[in-house]
Amino acid sequence: MQIPFSESQTRLNLMRAFAGESQARNRYTFAAAQASQAKLHVIEAVFQYTASQELAHAKVFYDLLKELNGQNVTVDGTYPVEVLTEVLPLLRRAQHNEFEEFDPVYPQFGEMAAKEGFSQAAAAFRQIAKIEKTHGERFGQFAQWMESGRLFASETPTKWVCLNCGHIVESTEAPHSCPVCAHPQGYFIRQAYAPYTMGVTQA
Ligand SMILES: [Fe+2]
Ligand SMILES: [Fe+2]
Image (cartoon, rainbow, N blue to C red; front, side, top):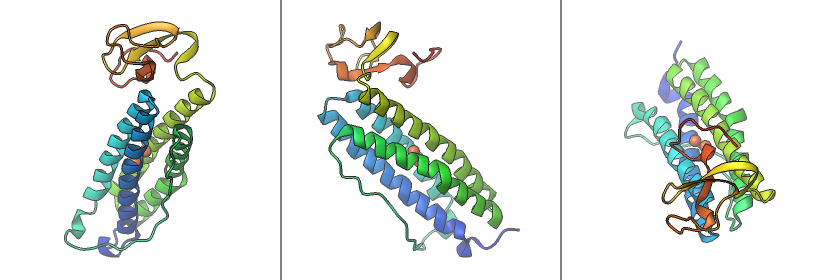
């Protein structure tokens, strides 16, 4: 049985999620600029790519509020302050926040939505929770490579893609500068992690 949306906990959770996604998008955009300053363009790209997905999540949650068009929804919430200049802690904080959304925040919101009879909202929370897990894992993977000095190096020959021109090199280390477009090493990403590549296995 569905309760009135205007009296539901789900409308508050949707607004919290919209606020959280909107803030995440901004935090990742700021983090991308920090990574760019540090010449870690691959990390910049990861933050930008993820920021654009947070925008998409924000829209899903926002659209589910449309029944309350023209009204205000008052919520309280807990949101992180992470004004950091170093890239590695930015990655680790982002990982932490993504995993928190994956479990427990969005599953709890999803359960409440199901209980209140809002199946579309329940599905959105459950599906987006799973995406946040992949975000957390990707941030964690890049943090781990940074920590172990393997952001641009690998023990086994690996395909590296220049994020500027698309040139692919197979080597245990990404080139110090791209032989095609001369962009620096900071632009190289493992092909398995490059968006839009097909049929590659992770090295
Ligand atoms: Fe998100
Ligand atoms: Fe996310």
